[in-house]
Picture 1 (cartoon, rainbow, N blue to C red):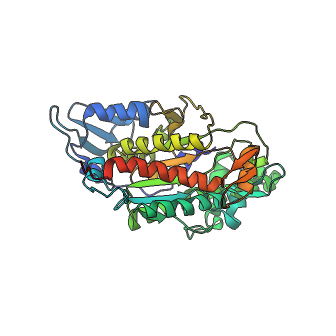
Picture 2: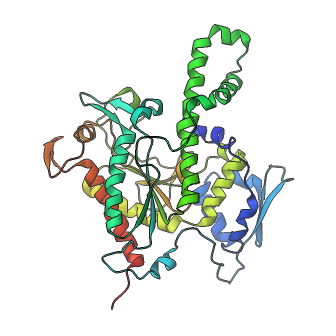
Picture 3: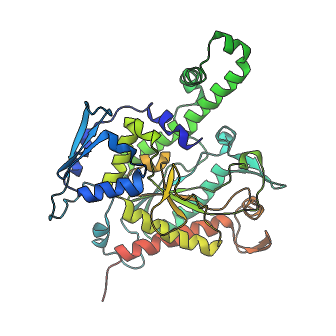
Length: 409
């Protein structure tokens, strides 16, 4: 359901000015442009029906008939070094020039922490409020906030400038579900071919469906879009970290599973059906041309290693699917077109470790945050929130230290 709603959401956003891509003129070769489309951003290659690609340039079109030109991107000339892109984040060469002290490796590094979901009284609407087994109710948004607060402290101690998209379980958008009722009704009536007769026969059913879509537009579209707008206008990060806890598709019913796995995502793998929408194509090319992959993969690989030391769990193993694909030899890392990673400027890594509806994880989440070590979930463990935050912090610090710390030899 999550991926299938991308097109539904994208058409509600305002049309963008494709001329903003002029800043990427001659910053990428034709070979690299096509490689990124084919292997990371659109493995189905469906987007090519909207492109004319030749050695000198690529033309982006609004329509498959190629009568409405959005923009022409000129490639770097063969044999010449591509021009530096006008990126909003510090590139690796720019990070090298920071020449930080070993005690402050993240000095001048700007990091966004985006605790997934909202939590609090909004957890029911988000469908993120569940009791697993005999454990107390778990609201994922609240748990994500706990991790982010601990992570913020660790990163700031290493010199980072940290911006949290929200620091309490309240939405940042001023919109509310009721604001989307009319839009949701129009969508439901069109989707299900509703007429006066079917409405009368199934009014309660359609009312519930309209309410569900109204809530969905609120927390998944309006909320994330507002977080993205705040990031673009208030901070412009060098790195975005979106922290979550994972779960299986049956978790909403409270069903427990024996399985437990990790998954991590960066932006990419836009589906063939998603390419029919010009706004979604705009998002895809925005991410492709800003070229965040090297930093994203380095950070994600480092986080993977740290999380495996905390809990040596297997990967989700999505394989090559319609909406996700591997991007390197890290079997835990996938490209996927998610709302946050396609809208947040700069490198963005989405973390989905542990299955909350696994007994081991659920017991540790239910225990809350605490000092020291406790005997629970079949072993002696530190707080899962501190382990999570420490693992991510150590990964970021170690990765950026390779780029930012001055060489004193």
